Length: 491
Ligand SMILES: [Ca+2]
Ligand SMILES: [Ca+2]
Ligand SMILES: [Ca+2]
Ligand SMILES: [Zn+2]
Ligand SMILES: [Zn+2]
Image (tube, rainbow, N blue to C red; front, side, top):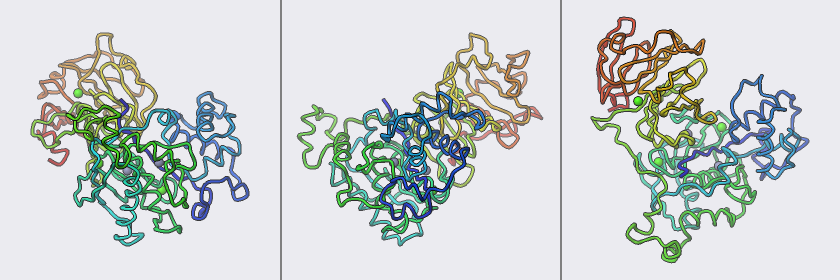
């Protein structure tokens, strides 16, 4: 089952101020600055990568005549009801420049609505505020935005003052500890994670924007109501009348929800005041509790401070370190952000398995996540294409999984560990080094058991073995320290 997905609302503005008064994104021909053709292509590529899952390739190699590029342009044109030419015509470019909220891709839209909370009383908490308006104004706008959904469904929202409410609301800027950094003024406005554990439901507003209660900046009520739709499991709508249409609109009718928005929230949580009927209609057995059943996300919350906690894989990913266990992931950013956690699918929607081993190659800004005999490549939060075969690295056929992997920048080598042996892969030449596999204990004295996970940091190798982590100096070839593995998560 499709689990949690992050949705981003992005605003690409044509001109400063356009969004402030224009109710929608009607193409404004005359106000558009003349754009360089190359600039158009760059805009289109970035747009399609962000919203339509266009695969990343070096800009030089990306051609507007390429088949994958054209098909993504068409997908976008179909979504917005444009002429499906596959070309970057005027209307298409206008739309790409126009205020809109990010649809990760069209496939997602075609699925039924997303996951739902497994309860109908949902807590929220405002963790950080914007300075753009008084706190009590923020409180009241957020409350109103939740009320939009409460009035239309069986849901009740309860404000909490803790840090572990279901929906944590934050105003943040740029990098903020998840894998989806904001972009400064304009561009991305906000994003929200779908229902789920940890970061699930959490809603982040880009505090580089000017937030307002009126229409002199971005209207917090409108954006919050849209984002909370995502936090409840709703996807984007193609209907321009819907709140869940992927675009910022500064003016809305008194009734902010379209019939479609209402139908979609009913489909997930049932309508107001007809709970009993809904339960009967859906034949839910009372033993589950009528509003407890129907959870579509796995119960796999993990206690990071369990003294016996082990990790399946640990890897750098950009400025963060990822810790994988089962289908769960903790992300610790190098800066002092809260540790973000949740099912892997929350951060990387395509990855619905556990991860055996992972490594990071900085000069490609790419992480490699290995599951059994396949691996994914990941840049930022973008999982590239389909998983590829582990044999790609040149393993013999009998190698069907590995325990751990780590890339060492200084040597340009990636080491793959499996039981008591390891391989060395030359990332520059993209071949296995000659003479491998070798015994781990021969080359890494002091490391005598299966390695669960490995990572390279600040000149040291770290081997995660059971609930401990061995700090290894590979020039001196010795273990220099042993500590609790989860001390890395602040335990
Ligand atoms: Ca949450
Ligand atoms: Ca922004
Ligand atoms: Ca492992
Ligand atoms: Zn959205
Ligand atoms: Zn975020």
